[in-house]
Length: 145
Image (cartoon, rainbow, N blue to C red):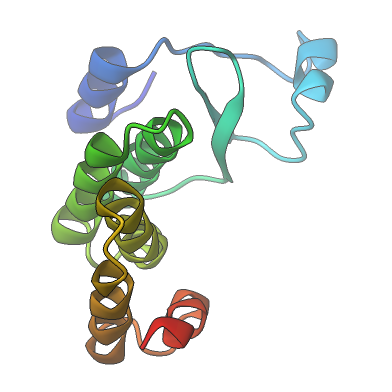
């Protein structure tokens, strides 16, 4: 299904992949509100959507988005230690991806939720002062400085 072995291996290790073809299954395509193909939707075990992304991406960016989706799912289930770990892996493993900026922000939030220590938010704001400085995520974190 995916030409890059890292992507297909990661998907088969962490997800239950389902392929919906827009022309063959238009009702299913519409059910998820997909506007373009491909649309990747990550659902949690309760079938609640936690993350989506559209369009074709290079393998590293695709993997970053998948891991970001897993982190969002863990966060929504109050598994903040797991969420923080996954968010930080996105930043460390895929620092040049669009997902890394969002992951850095949410890693700080997950750490705060896990520990109750507001210093985690301040630390995240400082990280944005040297990294991803022009991103919308840096602006959101700036109030924590």
